[in-house]
Image (cartoon, rainbow, N blue to C red):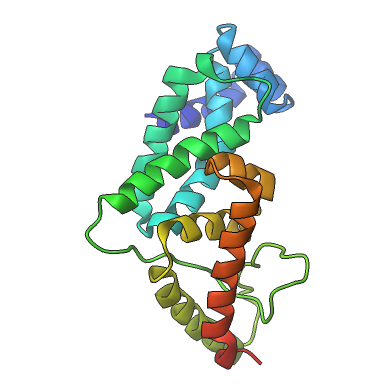
Amino acid sequence: MFADTAQRSENSRTQGPAKKTREELGSLSDSEVVQRFLDGEQRAFGELVDRYDGRLVNFVYRTVGDRERAQDLVQETFVRVYRHLHRFDQSKKFSTWIYTIASNLAKNELRNRSRNPLVLFQTIKKNWDADHRPLEWEDESMKPDDLFRKRHVREMVENAVQELPEHHRIVFVLRELEGRTYEDIAEITDTNLGTVKSRLNRARNNFARIVAPMID
């Protein structure tokens, strides 16, 4: 539904006034786009979909381990945003609000499953950086032997993730794969900052212990 809206909006770029409006929306901040939508500009919602659809699908997919289901949950996220955007506190960050909605839907999905889902990761660094930057994506230019080794490590990581409690998995994905700030994660998960850091530290320690033998 909303993905189709975004596609139609994309096609409209070639149509005179519509193209101008689209380009104008693209230059605005999230909060400005939200206000345009609340003021009656329907295309503004398509702009929000364009900005967040792919990012949210990746986030939810890494949390629930099923891309088709992730796409469904993101569609539901946009349905809820569309229905309740008038309630959004515009003194807050829109990105945090929409991630909170997606995160809650993902957590509900996990609770409804009879077993823990597989959470897929692209790769893992050789060591945790001191500043704890997000995990890097797999570099396809690497030599085949290196790719094989990293993919083997990834399989170990996938197995380890299945053992993580839900609240550890969520903060791990948000920080290490999505690059969200600690403050954003605290707001998204409705958890205090100290608890976020504690959970993330425990998750990292568990991963380090499991994959250490596989890392040079």
